Length: 59
Image (cartoon, rainbow, N blue to C red; front, side, top):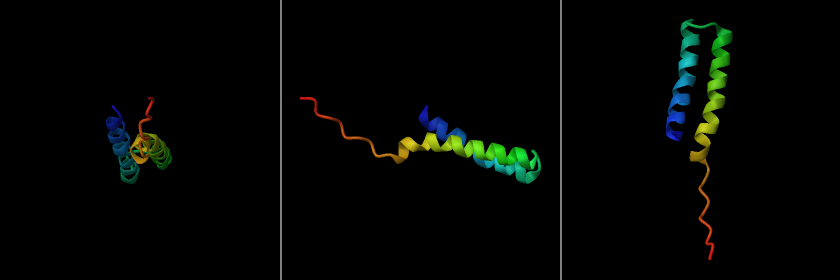
């Protein structure tokens, strides 16, 4: 599920930017959707950027 979030948001960001560049959406909408998609991508990729904790020995 987490990998899908990275893929979805990772594709959303350039798609929003591209739509704005082509004039398919207004510049204001392009900026907003690109920003939102970028912000959504950050929490999706964070688990991959953080080193996993070592398991604790509960003996």
